[in-house]
Amino acid sequence: MRIAIPKETHTGENRIPLTPSDTKKLVRAGAEVVVEAGMGAASGFVDHEYIEAGATLSSNRDELLGSADIVLRLRKPELEDIHKIKKGAIHISYLDPFNEHELVRAFKEAGITAISMEMIPRTTRSQKMDALSSQANLAGYVMVIQAAAHLPRIFPMMMTPAGTLKPANVFVIGAGVAGLQAIATAKRLGAKVTAFDTRPVVAEQVQSLGGKFLEIDLGETGETADGYAKELTPEQVEKQRQAQKEVIAKSDVLITTAQVFGRKPPVLVTKDMVDGMAPGSVIVDMAAETGGNVEGSVPNETVHVGGVTIIGMGNLAGEVARDASQMYSSNLYSLVDDSWDEETKAFVIDFEHDILPGCIITHGGEITNETIKNVIEGEA
Ligand code: NAD
Image (cartoon, rainbow, N blue to C red; front, side, top):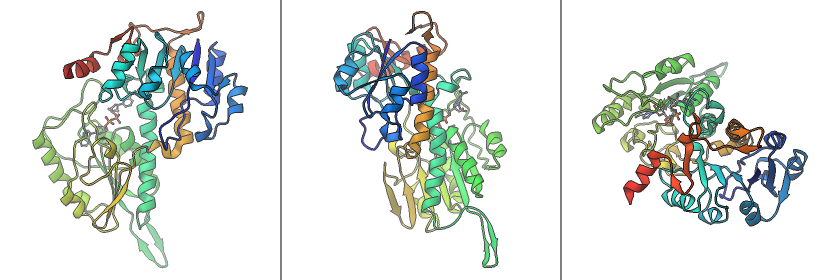
């Protein structure tokens, strides 16, 4: 099977889909890997490393896409790229299928099997393929580094002959993969960390990282069978806002990562709460790009509201592109390897597989993922 890796085209994206070392593994498995010239450069991988790994290079993107049995990439494709891929090919990338209806329809009409990295079920067995987790983990780290760089204070307590500096107070809202890494990173830097999440199971995880869990009685919250938070009622959101207000006012750094799968993130920090923070405080809103947890955050911008800095950086993992690429590449390789037939040296689409059907969005000219089908066809 011919696996093609086109160059990422999104402005400012420095992550890449496949490293030379994972290329080598695919070649060893019997795949013919073709890489667009310069594909790895943004993450510091040069063409000759791919050639040494057994791949060939192509400078003709149209031909590269048109001859591929499998296309591996990071970002969702442009519509025009989909039209270049042959019928029956497999396309694996982020896809944002809840929002990208036009792309999903284009994949369906082109008869391409589109696999969405966001939709890989969060099971124990699929952890090695879970790009949402690998990238969120790095995003958690980057948020704290960004906050530290903007805060006019240090994170740890420091006792010096020139006086004692108190540790910074960090409050993390949402303690999923990114939030937990943010807590761990802030603790490593010496901050005092408090966190809140609507899933009660998280309290113990926060405490095991040395953070304090803020107890708020919101009544029934729970989580879905997939381990995601359920959406709160407007009354519960209001209750949460009020209960967090005091902690936010005392925090030097506020990090928000609250998401509800497949929905717009909740607005948990209102303008008056931002106004209540001391001048110089820093907020990092991880949800800024998708609507924001914080009133006043602007996607991909750092803004100042009163004396408070609000960071709305979108591609957080992209700030550490080399490691992010290595992890994403490993996720992609594991996904391919898991469905690779050693005898025929081909990727097998199996709707009885425990992981694949959940993340296949289109196949054989149909939208096969029921959740996405309902969202898209419900709209028509
Ligand atoms: P996510 O990005 O969907 O959401 C981030 C966090 O926001 C979650 O912890 C969620 O509970 C929280 N949240 C939602 N509404 C909130 C609110 N109003 N206030 C505060 N917090 C709020 O989550 P994620 O990081 O992708 O993780 C989702 C789940 O998947 C978790 O249970 C995680 O442990 C689980 N998971 C499992 C595996 C695995 O077993 N393979 C891998 C990764 C994640």
